[in-house]
Image (cartoon, rainbow, N blue to C red; front, side, top):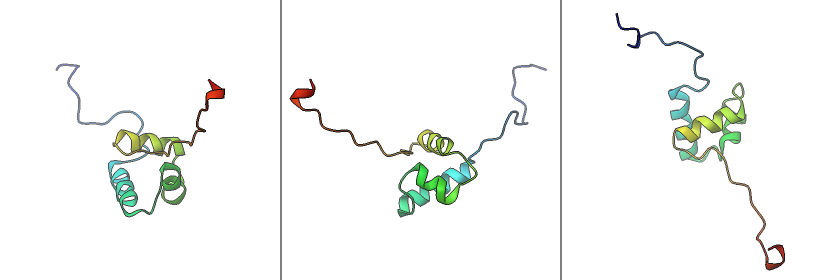
Length: 78
């Protein structure tokens, strides 16, 4: 056979967050039960690292984090 054809057997390490987990996370965001990835991880996925949860959400098209507030630049800063 052709060695470049994928076999039906998945190889490597399994995903930390399954597609079902990501769908559940989307529902939690939509209902307002979670604000960002770290909040979601603390409440619902304590066994998965925060950064992994944030990255999984970002790949799914959800913003997994809240941008940090930055001070306004004034003329004296320039």
